[in-house]
Image (cartoon, rainbow, N blue to C red; front, side, top):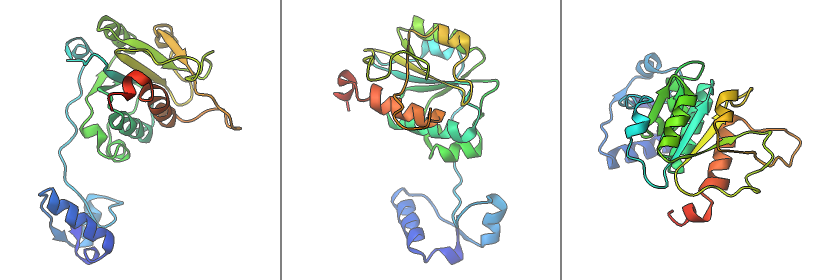
Amino acid sequence: MIAKEARRGPAMRDVVEAAGAADVGIDEVDRRTLDELAADHRGVVARVRAPVAALTERDLSTFDWADDAIVVMLDGVEDPQNLGAAARSAEASGVSMLITRTRRSAPVTPAAVRASAGALSHLPHARVANLTRAVERLHDAGFTVAGLDERADDTIYDRPCPDGRLALVVGNEGAGMSRLVREHCDLLVSLPMRGKVGSLNAAASLAAVLYGWVVASPHRRNGI
């Protein structure tokens, strides 16, 4: 749906053309109708299907993993914006699955879906009660588990990205990874920080590691 008075603008013409190319129907309505549906609609609102139902811990053992599958695990990321941004980077870089905790972590809210630019509608997402058990299931499935930890001795420049199946763990925005999850990782790496700030937020750190370490590694780069 688009606001009648907004249709003539150049940006809205692009929306109309893109919708037509995708065979998506458009209804012109009063702006008040859009105001009732969304607080910040900017003249257009889309009705979409909700993201696919979340997978469970059991699905980790039966999922059809590729030999070079990449999994992202968020250990207690609580900000929906960070969840969405992390999902966006994960989906764009070819990650096979996102895994988050069911407790003390951000749920999939409209804000998270918006921040993901739709990635949460495409990326398989498992929500698990116990992240340590999930790590063990991934180990059983042949994954190497790497934790992103600012206290790690090795940076992504010091330690080559492992071959084969890889799970990358990113911790809470403040406390980082929980102790048990850290202890179950096969290796820990950090981002080299060359400026005056000591760290990046969870979503930015994930994007940097995915593209600067995982996707950029020679055996994975050859596949893109």
